[in-house]
Amino acid sequence: MPACAVLSAISPAQVIVTGTLDRRLLLLQNTGGDRWMAADLSGQPHQTRTWPAWASPAIHLNAPESWLSTATFSPEALGQLSPRNFGV
Image: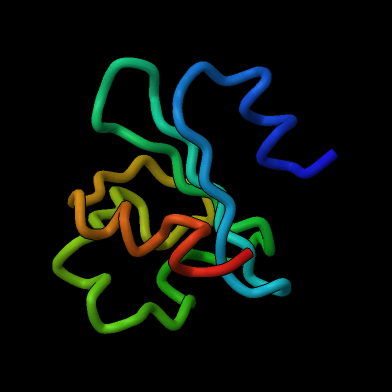
């Protein structure tokens, strides 16, 4: 069973898994809001990730020095991070 399906079964909000195989990014939407949890599944800090140019104005990580952070995303960023656009 794909990871997204498993996480969707236990989380009522949106779940996105994206990124390269060695730097998977897990995004879990908090129920009923625009707040997210962003987890770099490699365990490396978010600030060490090579982010695309569109990400800087569209993604705000509250703890970029950590592998786990609350985050906010613009609607455009969520569209870019969607598996149908980014590929998983």
